[in-house]
Image 1 (spheres, rainbow, N blue to C red):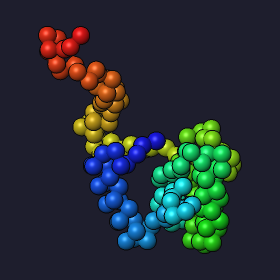
Image 2: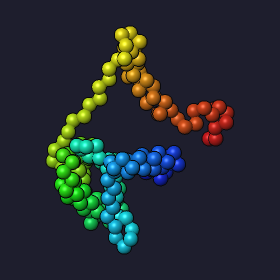
Image 3: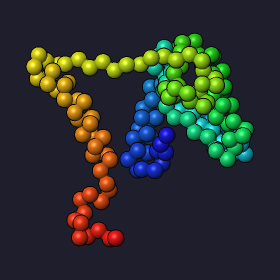
Image 4: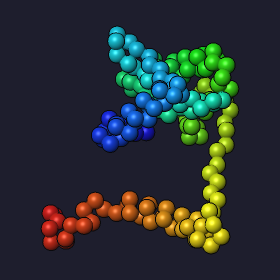
Amino acid sequence: GTAFGCGAGHRAWLVDVVRDAFERRRLMMLALRLDDKAIAMRLSFLAHPGSFAFKIAFDESLLKFSPGVLLELENIRRLHTMPEIEWMDSLAAPNHPLMDRVWKGRAAFVSLLVAPGPWLGQILLASIPLLQTLKRLCARRPQDADVHPQQRSE
């Protein structure tokens, strides 16, 4: 997972997305609180007829009390009161320790790319795997790779 508070750009993006979803009535935010402190929080987006979980967080010091599970059960209860929502997807990876305990079904999602033109579109589409490989290779590059060898500290 990621913490959106770690980067100013990430936080600003999340605030914009959440504000927009709220204004469109497509946001569902839940929090489980103890002594005025959030011990579990959940952020979902409503896309009628479905709902998609986006972020779930809980206080790990309270793990033995399962605050994430308790909040997920409240989420399920609330979704059952919303007739416009027919299904929900946690978007969790297979064998997820929380979601597999409360959700039994799984939906399959795929991406479909269609070339926008006869030859240029096909070239662009065919280049995607190469670009993805280059991105992965660049991400693995050492952080100080652009420092001259004589400038490195031993």
